[in-house]
Amino acid sequence: MRSSHPRSAAVAALVATALATGLLAGSADAAEGGASADAVRIHDIQGTTRISPLNGKAVADVTGIVTGVRTYGSRGFWIQDPDADDNDATSEGVFVFTSSAPTVAVGDAVKVSGTVGEYIPGGASSGNQSVTQIAKPVVTVLSSGNALPAAVSINEYSVPAEYAPAGDPAAAGSVNALTLDPSRYALDYYESLEGMNVKIGTSRVVGATDPYSELWVTVKGWENTLKRGGTLYGSYESQNTGRLQVQQLAPVATQPFPVANVGDKLTGTTEGPLDFNQFGGYTLVARTLGTVKAGTLAPEKTKAQAAGELAVATYNVENLDPTDPQTKFDNLAKAVVENLASPDVLALEEIQDDNGAKNDGTVSAEQTLTKFTAAIAAAGGPAYQWRTINPENNKDGGEPGGNIRQVFLFNPLRVSFTDRAPGDAVTATAVTTGDKGQAALTHSPGRIDPSNAAWADSRKPLAGEFVFQGKTVFVIANHFSSKGGDEGLTSVHQPPVRSSEAKRLLQAQAVNGFVKSLLATQKDAKVLAVGDINDFDFSGTTAGLTDGGALYPAIQSLPKAERYSYVYQGNAQVLDQILTSPAVKGFTYDSVHINAEFSAQNSDHDPQVLRFRP
Image (cartoon, rainbow, N blue to C red; front, side, top):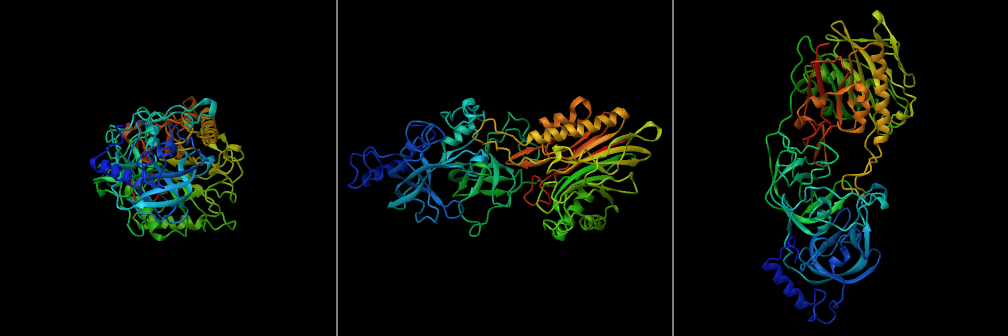
């Protein structure tokens, strides 16, 4: 008997009762009309690979105990055979897809006939693994009120350290045909428990409650732990195998989902079927949900710049437009003043046009920026001025009709902007020789190489010249292409296909080339490339930006435990960056954690601030 399926006295009694009633297949004493001696068992359906050996085939009289009922979304219920086989690779649970609200209850002993299938959440193009299920079922309830099979404990000792096997090259990197090795690979371990009743004990929250009523925990409290409670994603090889998504079976309307922030604890026992879904992979769908014990995590506040320091920041404000509630403007403004200490230059990403997602050809963002700068002043901040370039309608990606763009805000009492033949959406700025032989931009503000195919349906970088205490500083505001289309970490392909990287690499190379042209004209030019790079500090995108020593990722000056600006599926990671040219020396850097770790967010990104003396 596999050790990961403990059989308590209660389960043994259940088996005896089931045998007496003809519930379990293979019983020589099965009641008339019950399962036959060679009837299919759940572990026969699940098999030892991710794809059922009975995929597409009809099965009859599959028996088990109902361990969970889902009445919303993908409606159906989970059943589990309480009498496990001796193979760790085979699951004893399976989902029964009913399409309409199920009529069974937890604890029912049932007999199911139907067709075995493999459902891929998100479709085949998503790269997601499939869920083995029985569809078009005919269900017979044999008895009710039965004890449930004992839950398998998922904990730091049971989850392997290695994440996944390398996919079969002959099958385009797919792991579907590989025999599961649950003692070696975390993904194989979770797959071997697909559909089964599982539980976790008290666990640290590493991904805050989101709008979809789900959170992430880690069952490995020591795994790449951050001081503020998260789990650091520091390389493609370190996937943090202890992460697990938690949802609940009960509809939120009848049982509110708890609000949790990173660093909180989900205490007690959380128990229910192990599912696989489109947006999180393996998910414990809680029939019994633990209690959230709040921690002490608070939003950070950065140090104010000294009189002789220039403070430059970047902040993705998540599709800000005038139709957003005033509270969003006020909260973002308060963060600029109180958490970012009113930086001298603030590069904004995701400023939308004056009517947001209304797709009517509007591209101006004057109302958006007027409303935001007024909110900053009302919060006690400076009277920021701004510079930007309106995009062509629906040519820069993002929400259709929203026309997001980058914007420079600057405090005119501390820094001046050099306006030089301001560019437009399609005109490229270039490097020329200005006064005293120093580098200058032909258009300030101006866009970098907007006709380059790298920027098709993506935000074009905005470049500008600033003067602080007589010294020129070039700032390039970026918002590279998103990771949309990339496969998740739990993909059927291992390693996952990250198709979006190709475009970001081209974008990085374009910005790198522009910086090199500045440095070729003025070796000691002070250049900051800032923004939502949408990629990690260890990625090929960052390598493209830093090629030849043109730029340095300033976030790498921080201790590893501080290198993150975003939390995704329980992984704290870098997406937002400020990169510096060699002449920018003696800087201090801060990733200001005010959003990504919290359930209540003004944006899903944390802003970044760099201070230095030009």
